[in-house]
Structure formats: structure tokens, C-alpha cells
Amino acid sequence: MAKGNCSDSVIAVDMGGSNLRIALFDGDGIVRYAKTVTPREGGGPEIYADAIIDLIRSSLSAEEIASAKAVGVSVPGPLDMEKGELIHSPNLLFPVIPIKAPLEEAFKKPVFVMNDTNCGVLGEVGQDGEGCEGFRNNVVYISMSTGIGGGIFADGHLLLGNTGNAGEVGHLYVDGTYSVRCSCGHTGHWEGYASGRGIPHFFRAYCRKNHIPVKCSAILPTAEDIFAGIREELSRGVNNEDDEGAGGCDCDCDRGVFSGFYEELSKINARAISSITAAYSPAVIILDGSVAANNGELIIAGILKYLDKYLPAPEIRLSRLEGKAPLYGAAYCCALSLGGYNVHGENRSADTHTQY
Picture (spheres, rainbow, N blue to C red):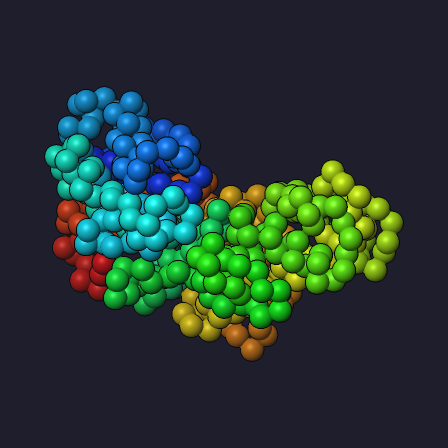
């Protein structure tokens, strides 16, 4: 952890829709790190806590586990923060998933559970806060991965909201034309269009609405297939008025379908970012998650092209923490709760402005 002046170690966990990661932190940063796949089948809701416990025990020594003062867990929302349970998380298997109680039982130490994107913004503010004037006080962190979520740090405060689930920006309403269904069950939500899971469904809806008879609209290429097609067409200067065969999928896509889809996807992303900018007036919007990390240049260029012009545009950039912002944030969550740090990595007793 940056600027750490606390020698106590903590265990941080980041449970995503695809990957499960743990790290042992001390006052200087990550001491040990391990990663596995998040459970996708079998058993009941306890499989997630069991997987966390198994990964911690297999990756850390008994002495390291015993010396850690707490465990911080970053989880996809929504969640009940008091109980430490996930509630109807759309990208996981069960309606209620207990995390806090089984981990406290296993390790006999405090366990703090927080929404992954709230952890993400804590990690960004704590680790990378020197790069922009006003950065530390007004930051929005957005994860674009299996789903989409956000963490909001405004006027030096982490916004948790009434239930601890503020920042669910993936469920902003962004479209009434294509009626793409989000994983939560509703239509028109940003996550349903621009997440790793949603992009292929949006692509199929785009092809159908525009009467594009391409094979890939039926077989649902992956988000990365689609971005590969976008890159290929843009590199050739192709637009959606051309009709010769091309594309990033292994099929007979019409030439121009990907570049045309890219314009629509960019408009969707820009609507969401415009709403976030209007609501929170951040100095910086940080994009993270696999979709953003792998396609950041395309995504940011498209957002800037269609961002509402009347808004004071924030800096929009990719995370510099190599996908570990939620892990850092989970560690900060422990430190804050134990009283050792504020979110800037400074002695909490010396700072009464920044609150958690």
C-alpha cells in the first residue's frame, strides 16, 4: 500500500465474475499474490466462500494467515454490507451468497466485504492519486468486464449510498432502440450493451435491426472477436457502406458491419459517461476490467467522439494498476476499518476530512 506507515498485514480478496484473486499486503504493498477461476457450477452458494478459503490456505503459509489482522473482500454487487452477503448478483449463480460469516468462521479474524468497484476507486485513489490536480477528491472508477459497475469518490468521500451499493452505473438506462436485455433482466441498461457478456448480444441486435444477413449475428462471436473486426475495418478505412466481405470473425460478415457497430457502441458508451459526468463532475474517469484493458484506445476514442459537448470533459484514461485496483481497495478497506489508514495511505488520526 502506498505511503504505508502501518506494519500490520492484511489479506485482500477480489472475487470477480470470471477470476478469483488474493493478495497478502503489508505497509509496503503486495507480499504474495495468487489467482484462480471463480466457481461456475456445482454445489450451493457456499462454493464461493469455500473457493476463497481454499485459495488463501493454499497460497499463504499458516504463519502469514495467522499474522494478518483482517480479510478484505471485493465482490460484485449488489450486496448486504452488514451481513457480508451478495444479493441477486446478476453474474453469479445464486440469489444469496454468504461471504463474511464463513470467512470469519474459517480464519477467526475480522472480515470486511465491499462492492468491487467501490474497492476499485479506493485502490485508485490510494495508489495513484498524484497524477492529476483534483484527482484524489473527485474520481469515478468504472470496471468494464463480465459486467459493468462503478465506484464514486466525490469531494474526498467514498459514496456508498443507503445500502452500500452506490455506483451501479452498469444499470444506467442508455438505449430504447435495440431493446437488448441486461443480465439483471431489464432492457436498455449499459451493461447489456457494453460489457463482455453484453457486446455480442448488442452486436446481434444491431445486425438484425439493420437487416445485415451475417452468419456471426446468429452464432454470437465474443467481444474480442468483434473488437478484432472493428480494428481490421478501421485500419483499412472501411465504413458500413462498403459491401465486400471482411471482418474479424471466422465467417462471411459484410464489410463495414463492424465499423458501423463500433459507432453505435461508442454512442452507447458516451451516453453513459455523459450521465456520469453530469451527475458527479469528476476530475478523472478511470476505466478498468478486461474489456477496457484490451480495447481501451478504441473505447476512449469513441466516447470522446460522442460525449455531450456542453459538459466539462473529465480526463478519461485506463487504470495503471494492472487489474489490481479492487485488491488494493480491499486492503485499504481493512486498514480503514482497523483504524490504521485513510484512503490516501496516511495516518487516519491526522486527517478528519476524508471519510469512509
